[in-house]
Structures are given as structure tokens and as C-alpha cells.
Length: 110
Image (tube, rainbow, N blue to C red):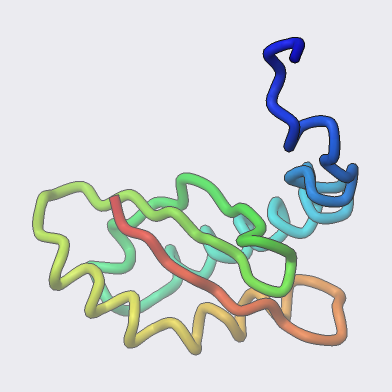
């Protein structure tokens, strides 16, 4: 016994967590810009006050995790407004990117 974990010696390279590819990062940047513009052009003042912190693949580019920052501590009205506008925001992202299928958007409000 050499003190190492036997699971590590049998680990496969495809079991390791994958880093986002260049194309995935490019898609996230395009989605972030589209969301930034869509939130600024939205008629809801609650949504206009939000800012996009980050957009990341979750766990792949078919679903994107969008992290939003709200200026005040009232999370419930912000989350309700974001859930109402989710379809509109997904449509705006779909128009800004060139892919056959628009990714699902999962929102997290800080």
C-alpha cells in the first residue's frame, strides 16, 4: 500500500469535469450581451435595474446559468419579474446567437 486512493488509479479521463470550450465561452458572451440589451430595453423597471453578472454553461451549452445582480435586497419581486420575462429573454438570446436550438436559461438572482 502506497497510501494513495485506489479510485484515482482507476479514474477515466472522460470522468473528469470538462472545461468550457472556446465555442461555449463564445456562446455565453453572446448570450450575456443579448441579455444585457434585453434587460435595458424592457418596460419593467425592476428588470431594467438588473445587471448580468455572468453566463455559464450548466452543465453544457443546452442550458445556461444566468447570474443576475439586483440593486436592493427585495429578491421575491425580482425573481417573480424574471420568471415572467423568461420567455422574452430566451427569445432575445435566440435572436442574437446563430444556433439551431436556443439554450434554456436558468436564472439566479444575487
